[in-house]
Image (tube, rainbow, N blue to C red; front, side, top):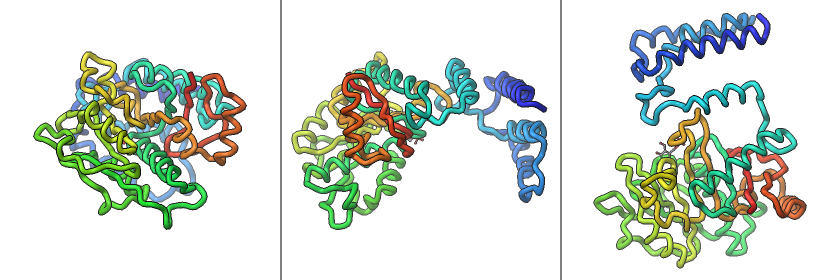
Length: 343
Ligand SMILES: Cc1ncc(COP(=O)(O)O)c(C=O)c1O
């Protein structure tokens, strides 16, 4: 089967899969699960024909999917425009790591980044990094935060690392999302070292019981607690944290999009934070996986996640000072690459 025929066959199967999805139960029928055993075979000595692989995937795999691309799933299906664009993206198969690797990807990310900052009314000078998950984007923002706090104390994190460095403390809500803790653990903060700040009966960080903050603290707040939907009182907490010199990060996987809705008041004051994480595969209903790391200090995020040295990075910025630029050197990082938005 030639490539075009094979792709047409795949597309036919995808359409046959998608059409009944609105009426399908979300978790696969129990009867479909034993059939998944068909995939358990030793690595074949010879590959199967491509059309046979496609048939196996569809006949056995499709009934074993969770219908996350349907309206009954917790966050709903991909929008058809996004799903259609994704089909084209597969054909493009871009390495979206730099302008030189994919001019169109760099251009689209830059434009999307600017639109997102406008829609969410966040500082227009922010860097926006597109990553695979809120977890990865939070990790990127917290890496940037730690690097900045250490630099303020004269510590060169990139070259001297953490051994013997001044301690950076992390304070999170008692109701912090588990993935923020995962990001902190991966960054080496240590679960026993995390400081928890109490919440009130709504589940919001309680201003009255907020432990003392200082200029070596990262305070993680939350927009849209996963069980209650609650938002921390950003307008009260962030000014206090900033006065103390702390870095404020907001896990807004769900909640940031309230800013673009009639419930924008829930996010009042959130724009004063230093960094924000949000998922795009949630409220915007695009296919998995996409999330964003947004950082007010664009250079902090770019420098923390870039591949090239800071010196080289500064030189590149100097070369392209005035426009919206996507950093030219590739950044193979967990946050994908960073679209720097210059206004
Ligand atoms: C509040 C909150 N933060 C973080 C995450 C993690 O998102 P992701 O699965 O994209 O890493 C979620 C996911 O549901 C969430 O609800």
